[in-house]
Image (cartoon, rainbow, N blue to C red; front, side):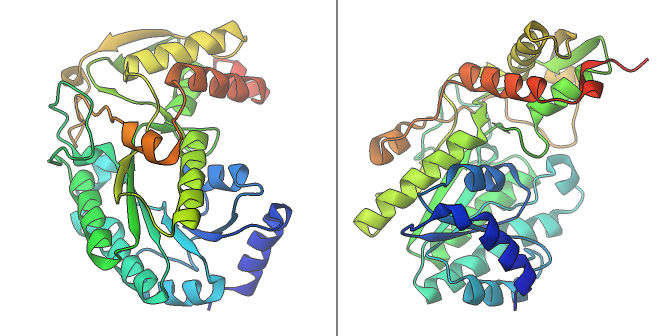
Length: 322
């Protein structure tokens, strides 16, 4: 069974939710999306975060006890092995966490008669498209991470008919580790940064992703199902990593926070073990149409996030190391 003190702690965190229509079990306890769901769910849903050791994606025997103890009305599988380069050296572990675990969660949620939402990624595409990817585009992952996440999508689709897969990209937030926080940290220690300028995508605020999923849960409750089983949900607007870094540090500098000169470089100048998609922009129009929710413009969201991080930062973040 799940440790009673763990669940008691989570329930105390959620005491402010009041009377809500659904309890959502979210896998993982410290991820960006899980943290945003806790922060954004007030009055809409009771969010129960369960992670290791109580729910361990590498130990499927832990799944059924958690489901029985929490008795959720919906499961969002937000946990994953996201070490893109690391997975090239450990594909078996990647598929265990990103594909086999979702398959078992899908099977168990089907038996329990509850829906499952599987969070997936832009890495299921090869990045060669000259336009935004839509849900009907053929996946062609080029990395172990992308292949394992696509296998997870397929496993959930086969395991529970009451499911929804949501692909997102370039997630940033005040929580956990992400690109915005990395740029601020590096700029606090260095005067110049080199950032790849020929890879493009949609920076996505985790709070927007959480709000979209809560909107989808509301529609599911009212309709008794999801309009379709696959959606893209990402921030509005196109950016390269270089453009994102430049915007972050320009905003930071305007607030007296860390700053550095950002130099554009090519992917060839920054080789990685796993190839990154050159273009992984996602078209989120279907999600907007069916759930009445659109993620915000990435520039506005990143500006607000950067201000939040800089203004709330401790003194060491503002000073370059000598």
